[in-house]
Length: 113
Image: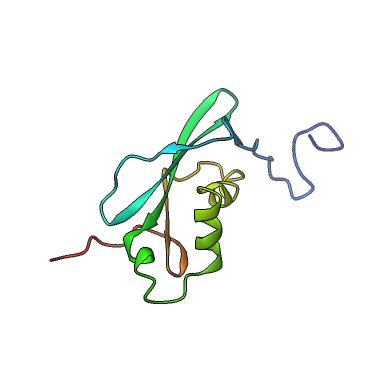
């Protein structure tokens, strides 16, 4: 709440309530093509629930290149390091993908045989 009680910040924008992690432990995410697996987290805000899955791209396990630190952090924390990055968003993404280079903005196209 703002100092004047209006709910508006000094910029005039209404502050969005922050999402919170429902349980401190993830479950295994549903299978997703071209990934090595991942973790599913439940988030809640004002009694509205959202699931966010953090996936590690299969290419990451090849270790052909150096793995970005955010990806290593994501693996070590079972995706929690990526979940904290979406808690302030109006609508968190349903999926987050981690690759050799770190978080991907969008899901990469499926590999072709």
